[in-house]
Amino acid sequence: SVLFIFSSRNAFSEPLAVPDYEDKTLELLAKIDAFTEEDPLLRMDAAKAHYNMGNIYFQKGKYEIASREYYQAVTLMPDDPDAHYNLAYVSGEHLNDFKTALKHYKMYLYLKPGAADSHLVRGKMREAELALRAVVDSPLEEEVKK
Image (cartoon, rainbow, N blue to C red; front, side, top):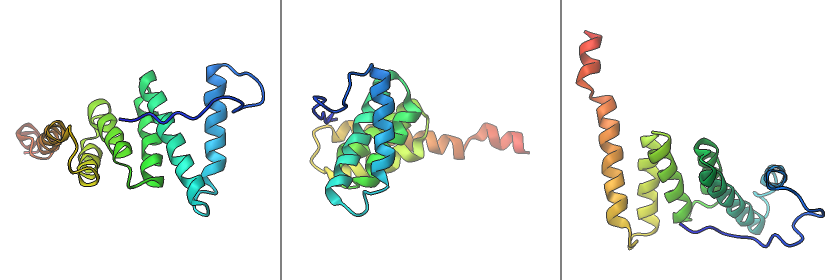
């Protein structure tokens, strides 16, 4: 998946520590999101910023927050296959949210049918389907209910 990088030169008026940049960026995103409906360019920039924040949180191992950022990116940029892939991956591999993983892997393949990694994605989809089926069709759970 692609990491969009914006120039950090003069991004903020004074030098900040990394956690401060993170806080400032989240604060800016909250303000920007309110105006994205009216401005398509701002919407795209906000989507890329959410995608970047998702990548940052993923690298830090903060998977739940990463998934929320990827979800925002997908909401703002529904035609971006990489945003769908990253949301699917973090959901399935780190949060055991196989329903979300399956949905967004399908969207990834729909948006990028000739993807070089399509065989791997289909394997992840099968894993998610099996995990969901195991929860729904668990014989052990059926025995407990009796």
